[in-house]
Figure: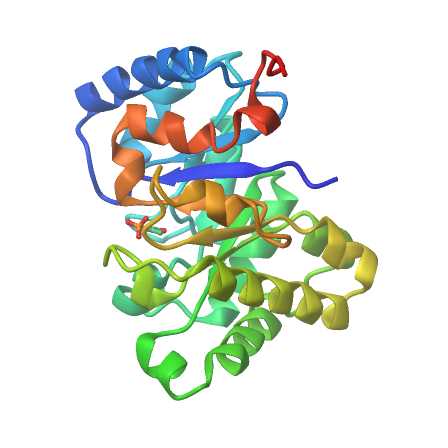
Length: 265
Ligand code: PEP
């Protein structure tokens, strides 16, 4: 059984005082939503400056803190970078790797993602690897090939156990921050395809264990339908995660699945 994961991606937003208020509000809102954090994994992936505050607020609360990027080396002359050893030292549980904005604006390649994936696993940080096609690639019918190539490149040199423990987020670039969501059918079709590629690269058992997220304009109004699909195990949420109340409602995508109190029939 794959445990659902709902992850927030704040991108480059909020100041330190906002992050403290957000953390406290998220705890309250999840309580008010009656969410059982044993039934759903929750991660909040934030800019590095917010991590210390959130780690304190979320201590023993069952909410993970994640980075949005990291270097693959443990230390060295890489001015401005943050290493996996530093994240592990801080108790950071998740790291987003290969987000399309990093691929687009910071020229992050599949080979660089493979190095970061290896580093994340060796530091026991759960990686959320992003893959997904551009609008041009979808319109040209190249979306499956694009994602297959990304997966082959990003998992180069990664062992089966590590692959099974990697979260893969399918994020079609045309749906990120645009308000345009892939239909649940399109999202699930690609999630199933990703599982089949992982079965080819590794084996069916590993592929079955991989948690696959959908990301791209997820909000409280569309999460239930997406989570109802066979191969979608969670969501990576950008814009809508900036509001703790809305994010808590997204985490509570189905009270029967993540609720503490069983629904009385
Ligand atoms: C993202 O940043 O990963 C994302 C999916 O953004 P949004 O939800 O705003 O489309």
